[in-house]
Length: 307
Ligand SMILES: [Zn+2]
Picture 1: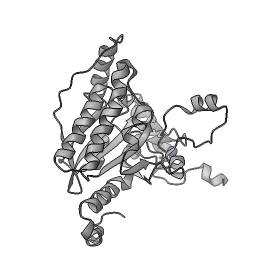
Picture 2: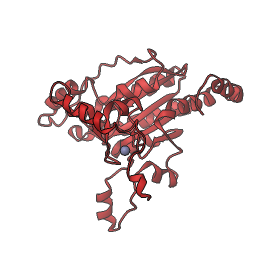
Picture 3: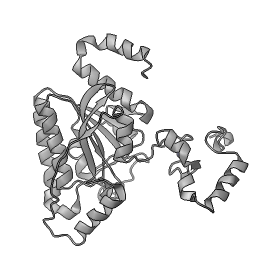
Picture 4: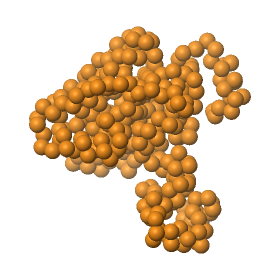
C-alpha cells in the first residue's frame, strides 16, 4: 500500500479542518455528534453522515455498504409512490411463552416503526410490477419467526396466483429462537411456496444483504433463480468461530463474505448498491420479454439507465 492511500484526498469525503471545527461547535447546542458524524466500520474513517446518506449509505472513501432499513431499501428499489404494502394481519406466535418476548417485540416496533422484521408488498422497478419483500436487520436482527415466515409465504403465493416475479432482500440473524420449532418450520413453508412459484415458470430473485445467516440462508436466501448479493455481505449458516472450533482449522479471512461465496459458486452476481435497481430491472425484463431483450436494453440505455 502506498503511504498516500492512507489519507483521503477527495474534499467531498472529509470536510476541511475549519469546517470540521465548526461542525463540532454546533454539537454543543442542538445537533449531536452522532447525527453529524458516522464512523465507517470498514476503513474506520469519520464521515459526514449527510454525505454517506447522499451516497446511498455507501462509504465514499472505501465503498463499505452500510446496513439499510427496509424503508431506505424500498425507496432505492421501487419507483416513487409505486410500493403498496400487503395488509397482512398475522398474530405473533409465542409457543414457549418465552420470558419478555412480547415486551421485546413492542420495544422493537416502537424503535423501528415496523410491525415485524420484514416488509412485503407490490411495487414497480422501472415500471415493471413485482412482488417485493425486504427484511430489516434493525428489527430483532431480522430474525425469522411465524409472522416473518407467514408474510413471505403469502407474498410468494400472491406472486404465484398473479403470475408475477418476486424479489426478496434478505437480512437476518436466522430463525427466531423465542419461537422455537415454529420458527424453524417457516423454512419448509416458504421453500414449499417458492417451489410452486417456480413450477408456474415464474422468476424469483434473491438479493443477499449484510448479514444473511442461519435458517434464512438455509432456506429461501439460497433458492433464488438468480442470487444477487451486495458487496462484502456476510452470508453463512453457523458463525465462523463455531466452524473453526468444530473442524479445528483456520478459515480464510474473507470466509462467509459475498466475494468468497461467489468464488465457491453460491452467488451469481455481486452488485454495487448504486446499480442494484437497474440490475434487478434488467433481470426482470429479460425474464418477462426475452424476445425483445436487445431493443429494450438500447431504449433503456438511451434514457440514461445505467449498464
Ligand atoms: Zn469506509
